[in-house]
Amino acid sequence: MASEGNMDSANQTYAGFVSLVKWGTIASVALAALVVLLIAS
Image (cartoon, rainbow, N blue to C red; front, side):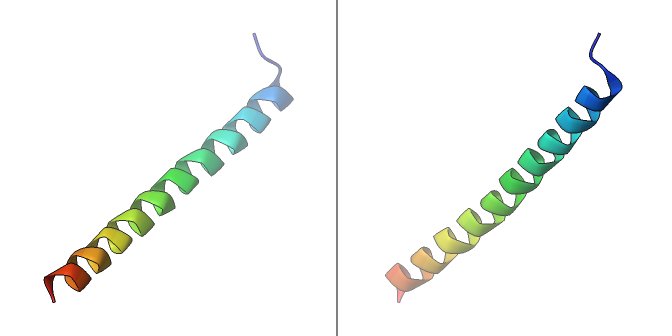
């Protein structure tokens, strides 16, 4: 089994990854909406 310190590090890494994916998805959707609006006009 992993040590407690190792699990804390893994949890921090996972939380950072989830946050990065969340903000990346939001940015991609916003950029796609902007491109659609520019093409439609």
